[in-house]
Image (cartoon, rainbow, N blue to C red):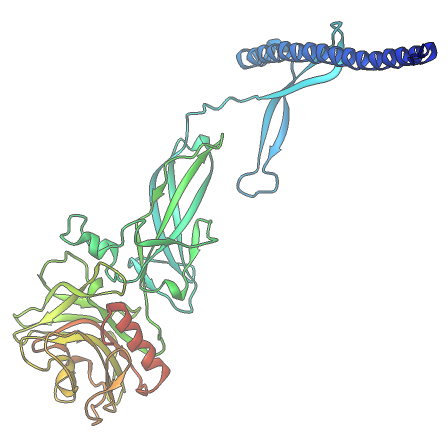
Length: 458
């Protein structure tokens, strides 16, 4: 008979003991988890109950703070900010959360409510916006200014509806693209080419970065452009109002100011853009030289289309003064120029009606800035012309030598100087009271500036 092997009594006892131990370990862990879940559920329920009680206390404070016995406290918002810093009053509310047995614990819910309730829907409104130009701290009233070494600023004055709910105003400054030489206030909104003559916001503008104050320092790269400001008010509760766009301000551009005597820009002549007879044409320097119509035939100021800028769909629209049928304007100087005064002149002009020439400005038989003395002049083609009293002449924005170098003469007696005379159109004329070299950097800066402004004279 074979012996059969099996587990001994001791082995059975050890196995049962191990199983019992393992079962007890798992059972303890499961019971701990069940207990934890019960406590978490109770804490959640107690927290929710406390939260409802907190809301009830807050509502009492909204309706009748005095009946609650809660004392108001204060807190400073935006501390250190010169614009936004303000002290607010509030009521604190604090409630403890109960444990499983209903006893208070160290866990608390805390909330605050403003002592002064501001209607959330109330936001300030900008009613009016006035744009001011200043130069060396003095106001400029001509609607624009030169960019030069002087301190030139543009700032915003606003009036508000509901100023009592105003916290602060956000300012964003924009500058227009090139190609809009007519000031905004010289164009009527119902003009036939309003969208061509005036930059349209925001398509024709770009944001000036890092400029958020209510004033802007005008710099040289803003010359020949329009400046606008978008002002956005915000309420005491941080709600933004409607942005208000200021009226554009045009910044005159000119790269050279030393010895500047006169500057006539047709685009700055006030009035409409349709053909109109011109009685007076003031220059735009601080001297304010006046040109009066001479005789019965008056020159005509009108809108003129210049070539499109590269990559742009819109042509440049500017104004020009057309001198036809021997129409002239007498230049009235507010001071005595005197004999022997030298000069340098620059003009954006064209000869018209097959004349092949055209006098821009002259002084009797003494001298004349006449297009017939330039070589390569085509009728009805705009270009940049320059001449000095020594007879140096250039044409185009690159200042290519053109014509003879015969002496032209000097600026003499104020009474003899005339603008126009025969079949010529002038968009801009600049006069300096010194002789510039035609190869100087100043000469080339001015011709380049005029060529780029009107996209001509390549």
